[in-house]
Image (cartoon, rainbow, N blue to C red):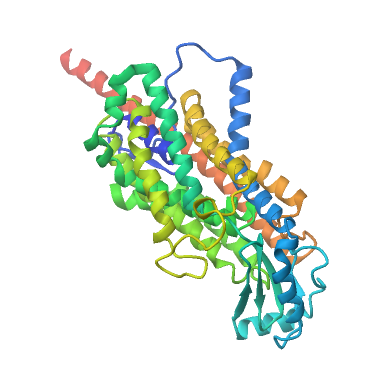
Length: 463
């Protein structure tokens, strides 16, 4: 398998899964160094590149929460109808309404009743009532058995935003290809058969991007970053059964440690506020699954044709990615699992609920893609993977905890279990990445020794 095809498959994916080398027969290879650029970059440039990559790699989930907070704070005269409905029904559901954290200040009392009684009632019956208004930036969701009022921000349609992101990226890659190769490369980019060939990859990447945005919308930044590490567990398994390549026992141990940490983290969230927030986990799993399947298909395609520049291959993938993002508007079930779905009946149509923060989110997502490719040019994938793990700690967890987006109380048993689970996942991820690096070096050393032994044997036979 071509080393170039392998590295490109993973930069297209922007995931730190395992890759396998056909010639060596060992799991390896997202660890191979990239060719050095013609002009060696300065240390300052490389440090700045890593810092920017660390920021953009973690920033999208953080900006999604900034957007959600801003939508709640936008509460005003447009939300009068929702306020009136809440006040007129605060004693009408059998349990007195109380506001969960995140609702506009002064809406209702925020004192939670007896947690054990609420927990028992929530397990006994799961029924919610919603109230929204076309002009209001958030909607009220009342859990009838417990009287819990949750204020959910009205959000933009993820497929619409990612469609524009993909189209923006496509234009940028067209411009770059024209700059370096003129119309000859542009013709390669718009070759109908080649675009069709990469359409499956683009479709998976598009769906994975939408699922990622939906997961970020449903989970806190820290929880999303940690649950997304499940890709380290799932993707190697997909590669193992697809390419029939063995995975070292030590790697399986690292994968098991990460899975154990994720399980502990999830157990810590089984309480009144988080027990039924499984929708976010569902989107994370779908995102990871799409990334894994996309990596397999990308690997199969890229190793067949390594003559084309990477930028041309990306330009062939982005049209189908943009189309897939657009189609998710109707193909992905709506908030209440209605299907086929459609654009919400809200002002703005295609651009409903867009604010300045929507543009910030889209630009940061596009920047993450571009910087991932830049890091791939100057560093090997170990550096990229380590940056991803470090990003869980800072800025994701640090910023999210300081701002108050993470439901974490270190003094409680649940908080301690959550911290322990997070630490286990991070340590396991570091061990996984560095262990694979050492396994790669050892594999290469063994091959070199075998090659030298073969040469020595032939010399002995000749003499």
